[in-house]
Image 1 (cartoon, rainbow, N blue to C red):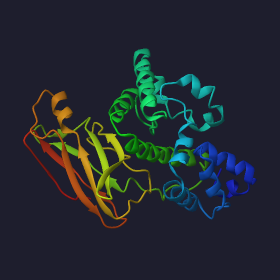
Image 2 (tube, rainbow, N blue to C red):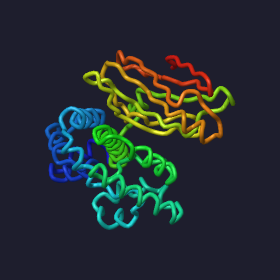
Image 3 (cartoon, rainbow, N blue to C red):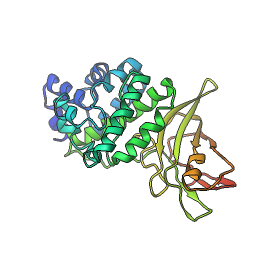
Image 4 (cartoon, rainbow, N blue to C red):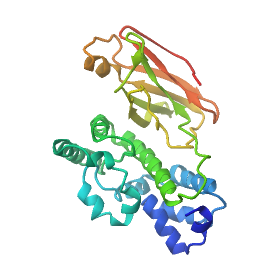
Length: 288
């Protein structure tokens, strides 16, 4: 289906499909005010604006209830049958995991839900069960306020992926990678810094609020720190690198348990903020 075919659907059919991409009634209602859409770019733009600037925490939490728990394969096929055609491959990394790892995921997700009041939301595409467990255990330590912000950002990543599955014949070449990227290089061994937790925080009313969180891959990068095409508002931000656990895991002592890099966003251009780290020093710069 392309955007023209989607526009020919009845309002009821279109709304139902949009809800399967993001389960918030308010969000769908806002999008349907622009139906039919002039282009797929317009759909993405309206969806982002509605999600970040119109919807409230109540709407975000509503969308979270439409997801199966990570690792709960049975609920994916039974309880959430209406989104199975879109969500079926999103947890493929879990399906190949060992029963023990599945149990750990389920147990950690229960602990997470008890603390935050909603299930763990993560854009699982391309992530292994082990990676998702690491993310889950990392995020359990967050505050409720921060975790709601992180989860709503993850939901928007999922929404974009489901748009692409729904409109497979549309031209998606306009989608840009994360506006903000980073990578970590361990200069003491000349290798990428793998497995480092990074938090993106924004200064709001002189308080640092986490808006995104991830773990570096084997290349020392996080490919989707922000949803595709998401543009940060001008202001002050910082990347927080949890380096203590990285050095401990590699049997080394590090002088800096945490590295904070503060920077300013001025416009909608791409920002690359790398970290060069060793046990006793670090440096950074604005890359390309």
